[in-house]
Length: 140
Length: 211
Length: 193
Image 1 (cartoon, rainbow over the protein chains, first blue to last red):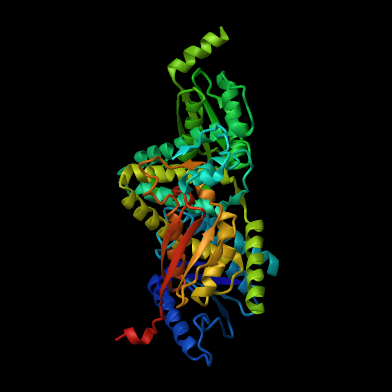
Image 2: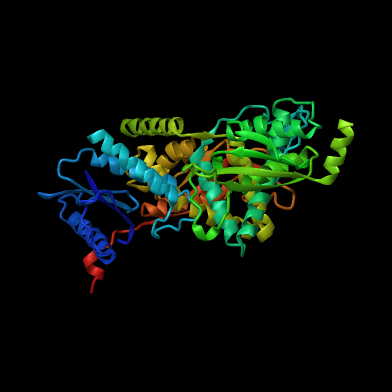
């Protein structure tokens, strides 16, 4: 089961957050912002741990806990898609790839969207909802 | 910046005496206009169109001005597209009646530019000079979400401009505007209509032809 | 050499696949819309030099967005070096977005500058420049901006310039790309004093 999605811009700013489940933890918007920028920093720092230096390793991709998993995808431009889900949830990687495509279509091809700013696009919401339903159908 | 003229030049008989710039000119004229070009990715068009909207937006104060500018941008496309289509399809017969030119735009021109016919062409009841073309999902709006503070802006004003340009180039002066209409009891997205209002002179001619 | 040949053919295939699977529109719609847009910019700026500059700037705005579409859909992994990026642009990106394949050549000795050459330009279909613009207007200059913007988003800083343009009577179209630098990642704890 999917819990929460964060989209984080290349500077660590939260540009989108959405809960997909009643059971998702509810945080204040300040906490979401803080979480996004902290995760952004941790990812960058974790890259420094890599024995091989690469411009493209994106550090932590997955965090597992007893009650949820966190899966992250970062494009080479630095935009990050982070989703939390129940521990047994499958196909999170593909789900995030799909969201990246939707972002390229319904956010970046929208002339009223300003790069790196919070995402407020009706069609993105619609398509995201559809992707979430597809994912849930496929994994149930 | 003009559409190239549709005349076939005579080829130079002795290319060795032609200067570089002349050769280049021949090259341009030799490009086969009738070849059906490859299609391009929708992404290419969508990014270009989005940038055009942003560019125009920085130059206007009001939503209505933005619509006018989009309409003007489309007008030039429509004008040239119609000429090009007539030439491509070797159409010699020109439409002289309102319903036939509108039908031609709805089907042929639409297919030529958007790869599908427009959904419907209808006459406005009780208005002799008004028609509308309806399109459920105009291509240019595929990825566009209009923010609330832009009111009823419909970026398909660009396509309204295309219709206006094509009509004008066929000798039917008209004003064309794009609108969203919300169908009652439908939760789906609003559909777009292109309101076409023909000029009085066009209507007079039509009456004569009908007479 | 053989590994670079096989990489080239991999990129060609990626380009063909990305082009093949994308939803299409009429190339005429793109060419005519581009022409109408350029016309609008000429109306606003008049001076060819200013128009060229504006076209480049608008292209840059497109490039910084288009790169995500490219990365999301092309299947290209990462652009690691400048050299590789130039090949990827001409073999994958040109094919994906313009339906044509360009070639990379004219490398300088330092290997930090090269040309992207393409015979066919779908943006410039049906265009003849009026005499007052024929030597000054870089009709397709938006492409330079797109390349610059897209590469900047993957941390590669370049300058681009049209050096040959068939619309101006040249035998081909050639964009010169000069490599400037690769942006280094900032380590977060350094700026959190």
